[in-house]
Image (cartoon, rainbow, N blue to C red):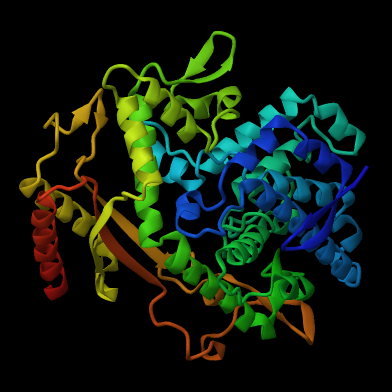
Length: 493
């Protein structure tokens, strides 16, 4: 039967029985042990929420939006509305929203954005969405949910509108919807229903229920005001025809509300997601995970006689199910029990430093000028080169260890990027469609002259930060002098 959840953000929400069965699995319950904001809890005392409640919230909002779209389409016979959104579509969209974050690793984006690129630099590009798809398959197989899904009307076999394929495609996210004429965009649904892919993970303009939930939820736990009203967006959302293709559109008068959404996104990145101290904590967590990954004795076990290193767990969903934020407690325990110096002991020391608030120090920050935004990579390389000259790396000097590139263990250079989600482009004017009160079935882009003059001229900004890792080290002053010299050179050019 359906289940009611009392959520602090959305109130009492009711989820259908199939979603409840998915929630009551080890693979989904794992999300209770993964912090939504990674290392943010070490900076913001209220940021204790996890991926579990966010995923439940997204599943709820996905259902609210798709049902609202269906209700409005029933009012428009010209859209062939009876067949456009059916009950199977609604259930699949809800499942995709619920399961979109199944693949997050320890401390959320620390694992896929910071740890994995260094632990597996030669591997294929890997994102948590890829693991979410693999984990969804594992969840369905391990809990024998295929026949249960069939009981609820889902099609799980064949190539024609396979619902499992549809759900996984929505988790991966929509593609840019401007294909050549008659080209099929997706396998799970035909092009007539491509707008459904804009609900959970909208890669076209970034307006999706994933953001609706985490903006509201993160602001609530961080103590930051959220100016975007997602409930109002849902009320005014419609499916409209845009040059022969259907898209989710908003009422033209809602443009200001949508700009508030992207302003909230930018504000959260500046004040929380890329907070200077939060970034320092997450670099330390990443370093500890890398150290633990080097120790052959520290492995993630998933079955009798089966185990693998941290960096390989993403390839084995049974192991990945056991990999959560609790890994740092395991590192502390095994590191304390180590009788000989090892990389695991070094990992434990880094975690211990976090616990004692002995964090990496910010040497300095360079805010790139508008005209220099594309030079961030060059400036980063310059900083690493100049700092390495005055402060050599400890240990091997060839920059590699076991075939992997080794970062300088004295400092780290990070780029903090702030934008509206589309690099230096305006996501509203360039990628978002609206409809008017007088013609609610046809979508269009807002004309440049109708956009507010109070918007920023530049939609992207990059800050380059240097963090010092060593404690009580006199060479910190040398690092600061070197940084200031490079900063002056960048600002003068």
